Structures are given as C-alpha cells and as structure tokens.
Image (cartoon, rainbow, N blue to C red):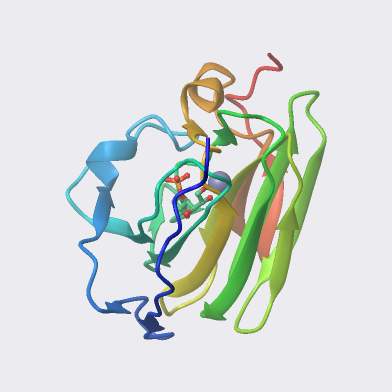
Length: 188
Ligand code: S6P
Ligand code: ZN
C-alpha cells in the first residue's frame, strides 16, 4: 500500500516550561496516578509531570515526539520521576534531548542491567531498543526534555509495575543524588 504523504509542519518549544506553539493539551500525571511507582506508596494531587505530544499517524514509519515537563519535588525521599516504561514493541529505540533543568535518565534491561545517565540542557541520551526508561528530576527547576521515537513503539507500563519498578531508585545522598537498590524490585 502506498504511504500517506504528510504535509511538513513545524512547532516551537518553550525550553523552560515545555509548552508547544501551536499549543498541545498536556497529559498530566499527579502523585495519585503513580501511587505504587515509588519505593514507598504515595498519594496526593501534586502535579508531577506533563507530556505534550506532537501527533502523527502511528503507522507508515512516522516519528512521534513529545516534550516532558517534570516538576521538582520529592516523596518519601525519592525525587519526582516519570512512571517509566519499556516500549510495547521492545526493539523500538528513542532519543531524549535535554532542554532545561537537571535530571537522571534511568535505563534497565529485561535481564536487570542498569545504566544511569545525566540529563540537562543540551544532553542527548540514546535509549536503545529493549531498555526501559524513567526520568528523574534531581534539581530545583522543572526538568524539560524532548523525546523522539518510532511512532508504533507503544508504552508498556505493566511490565514495570510487575517487577516492582526499576532495579534502583534515585535519592538524595550526602554528596547529591545517588542511585541505591530499590527494595521493591523483583527480577522478572
Ligand atoms: C515516550 C517517551 C516519553 C515519555 C514521557 C513520560 O516513549 O519515553 O515521551 O512518555 O517522558 O514518561 P512515561 O513513563 O509516563 O510515559
Ligand atoms: Zn519511551
């Protein structure tokens, strides 16, 4: 079948707050939406992050992209973070481009390997297929980044829930943010 020919388009990103022009409605995640994501159960209506997606058809080898604005804060000593996911189609890769703030990108494979990378304005993180990814705001300002990925990737949040999160969590240590073992993690 012949691919649909899309018309080229452009957006402008506000790199400090992650909003788009033309505007896109944000998906919002509050503590209440992620009660079991943290090592200790949490709740509350505090806004943790917002995602604004530039929609394209999820077929025909398009690239989906979005901004994430992850607010600063902590719950039970853990920095605010995204839920985190594997891609539903495990081999789909993704690129993260840091726009502002300071964060950590937590990546883990299905066999439990872990890699933690830094995120800041100008950072580029490559997430290969097969690696779950979660971003964490370790600074005082919103962490804003742009993500680009193959449009049919999909997000598998359940696999992360089933294994009790990621193998490590990011907490404030004596010398700043540090990764420590997640007491809830169970190798799938
Ligand atoms: C999508 C990409 C990001 C995240 C966003 C929120 O593949 O990795 O756009 O969706 O940062 O994270 P999460 O884990 O709630 O989808
Ligand atoms: Zn992803």
